[in-house]
Length: 290
Image 1 (cartoon, helix red, strand yellow):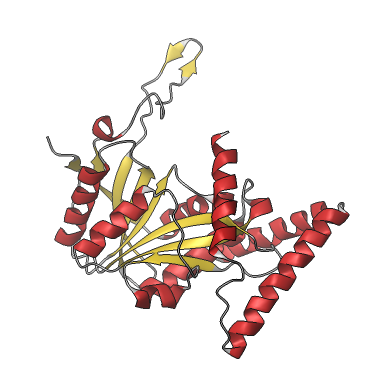
Image 2 (spheres, rainbow, N blue to C red):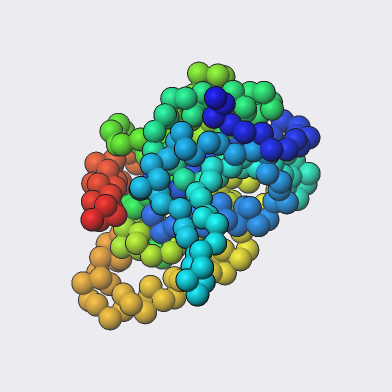
């Protein structure tokens, strides 16, 4: 039985595959909001769906039942979809959306990579966001996980070695590497103290990063406007606590030192360190699962 059911055809020319699957690390809902913006912004059509009976634990991701005056409507099942569209300049884009599979990751990865190869995908880009020791008062920076050093340098990366649990995007990224397709994960660094609330600045940075690394014509104006409002609200909350105000000041000093040393050509590998970011990630995961 095929894992993928094709429901339509689309003419694509060297498309970029954008992966925005739900269920793993997404601090500040950065990737989720970026993907929703992308779906709204890129006219698209459904190409096909993956068989979620094979991929999802329905007790963990239960379908939704609507009941009206005691009468039930058809269940709304979680779907994993592949959609095709074009950006504002007419460049082809594929969108992989839906919940992260609960099982059969190797088969799913093989199927996605096979479909992408069949359709001539020139690059795969995953979207994510993680909590980091950064202040909300500075521009949101991206970090990458990539299949080549050139891509990692183009986006930016966390220096050093970090062992972290992997999501499905990581499995897909390595699958594309084995198939010779460039792949990069874009990760927005979200202030650790804002990781549990919507943080539109992260989503805007992901849209801008995607446009830059994949050569797409996109805009993040609405997200940037929302980010300005969110930043003002955080300012008001932090102003009520001397401890929090001092924390943000210390983070600003740390980030500014990194920027100054980068401009001077010095080694900035330890500010902030991989250990610090990994620790923030672990705390975020514990809180999310709790």
